[in-house]
Image 1 (cartoon, rainbow, N blue to C red):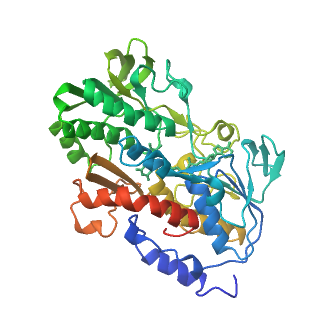
Image 2: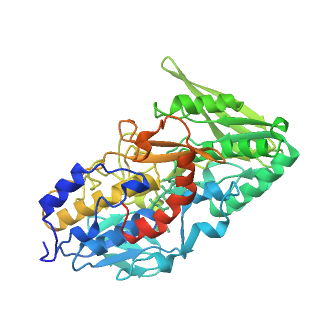
Image 3: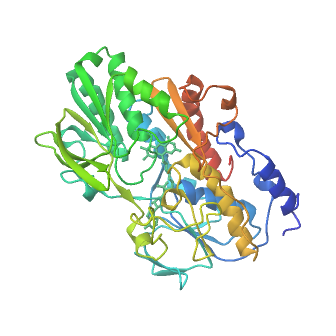
Length: 451
Ligand SMILES: Cc1cc2nc3c(=O)[nH]c(=O)nc-3n(C[C@H](O)[C@H](O)[C@H](O)COP(=O)(O)OP(=O)(O)OC[C@H]3O[C@@H](n4cnc5c(N)ncnc54)[C@H](O)[C@@H]3O)c2cc1C
């Protein structure tokens, strides 16, 4: 441990544990980076400089006395993806949700602007597309997830918008969605919204854009001209019991029809027809019922998985629910790989049973960083992540149902929301979502603060 540390590790961990690790803005700063430092040495390579990777880089730069950190990421831009929903509803302009990646990579970090094509964890070896092989002592795996556009027949990333088929899970797609919602409000017709059967980023996002479309048409006095239908692949609209009743009530009050257990097979953009199937278990048997719906406006969610190079690396779960899509086999509390203790993984790529959100990452970063340093020091990783995730479900232009919960789906409201009935939508949560969280992302998390 460094001479320049202000308090001992033991005291630091005690303070951290005793302080509620809340998710709201007010909870920022539990892990005051200046209060801890370590002389641990070793070459750290971070694969993926998004929300999780850059936050880890920034925090490790602060906590290590002699950091040796290499980041591999091909991006020109850093996107604040939670803002895509607000671009798609006209609240943010597109230019408000991104910054140049060069301005976001912490100084002192060696940035290899390249794509990783393979990892061999037994050799501690990474293969890049254009820069040959890179070796590491410690690996931070944060490449996010891969959107599998080819898994929905009839539409691709390039053809988004054709037949009035849209998705906010893409920057261009979000912009097209906003233009289409405005037009849909004028023309009227049938709006179909879907999520998907795989784990996906921000499970609330498909519901948010549906509710915002509803509210937008009400504001334009055209709601009577549209019908809205939400299809979910899940057994229930939202599986966090504290928030589910109010969300169902809102859908009911707004006259939005919900169909459960249903997933998209393909889209005929020419005929404006979506082919789906409902999969139900009756006794021991799976009963599959095909459904075909005409639409005038369709918002769909593409299937997602871990990136291909991760699936091929031997770092993924090999059995259980998280194996199919290749999510990484990490301990759900320590975020350390179950087989390779010199690897930590967090963010969307991690195979842990919580919601894939940047709010979750905010609570994962200090745990993963502290545990990585413990491993570098030859100690046992002791920090534990409790599965905290937050999903601000925008229910209208002015209110958000701020769902915050842990692995056990217990509500975990952040201060000052502990003083409100957070099982209901709140105006204060809207202000947090629209005004507070983006600066917290760009000027807090990505700079190694605000955890
Ligand atoms: C529409 C939408 C709405 C959302 N709403 C919310 C919300 O309201 N609240 C919330 O908390 N979260 C929300 N999220 C989710 C949140 O944005 C993600 O959970 C978060 O960005 C994931 O961070 P990450 O670091 O794991 O991945 P990312 O931020 O996606 O970063 C992954 C990085 O890895 C890099 N990479 C990928 N492959 C490779 C490779 N082969 N080699 C090298 N680098 C690679 C990429 O270039 C990228 O920079 C939303 C997301 C979307 C799309």
